[in-house]
Length: 107
Image: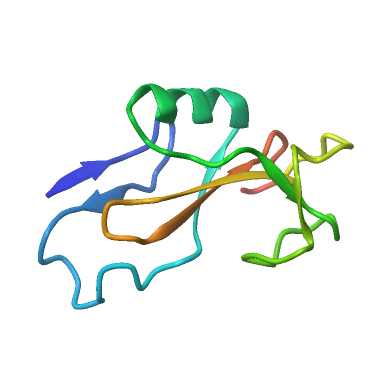
């Protein structure tokens, strides 16, 4: 088991064998919030993760996991919460990086 608390976060992510009864690859929309999408992608690539190019949702608010509403490139208006990249872990679970530069009060 490996437990990773992101810097400055009160949350953590746990990876390991036998932690859940869920089938490998059954989780498809895990979100990791990052302040800088380009920097986070670069770090993951440096560590050997195959991660897709940045994309944004045509509707401005991401709620689609796939389809023609997902457009290449970061959000053209640079809005907080609007730019994403995705990758799959070795078990086939799909993860999304979501860039959030400005947090709402209390978050």
